[in-house]
Image (cartoon, rainbow, N blue to C red; front, side, top):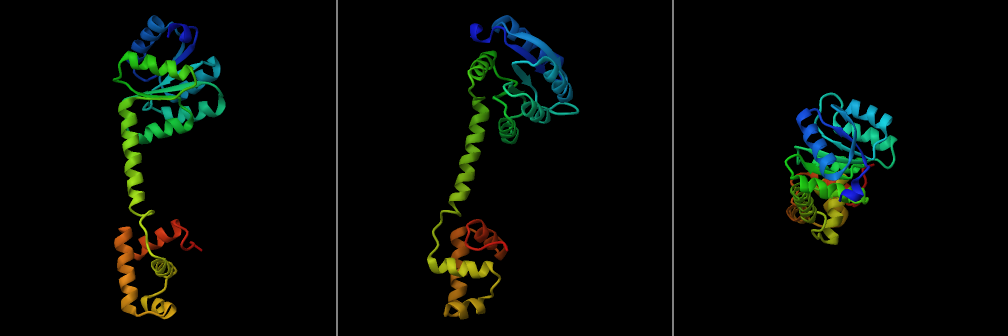
Length: 221
């Protein structure tokens, strides 16, 4: 690890001095990295990144003033090639996904062992992405949950006739109008409406309309 990380110029960003002290000591002593600057908030991080042109930025998320997310947005937009490693106490998937979408290369929790940080830096320096296992599990579980929710709607089969009824409902037609248009009884229309709602687990005309628009059954015009 020391060979691949030696001479890498690092900017540390955290509003807690004790955190910066600990990370600085480990990176310089164990990995042979050079700490070229330290910032206490996002605004200072952006300024120092512009001035010092570091290879790597290890940055907290929650800081006073400009936070780490806003700083990462500016830095990634202005400085191509800089690697950002988020080191945060927050495991919320929203922070993780936003940092990664902005261009961060890794996301770790502050209570991780130094060995994990070393592994993450090794991967980042080889142009790979690293997510702390605890955080990664939460993100994956949430994605699976979201897929499960989609499965219960988007992939639930409704019959061609039910699609016709759904389109007319979404277009604003009343039961009598639908019955006349499709040449069926009002009772049959009501039965189709009930079946559609049950299959899609939807409970109002507004929800049916949103579903129909989303699935391309009708338009929002």
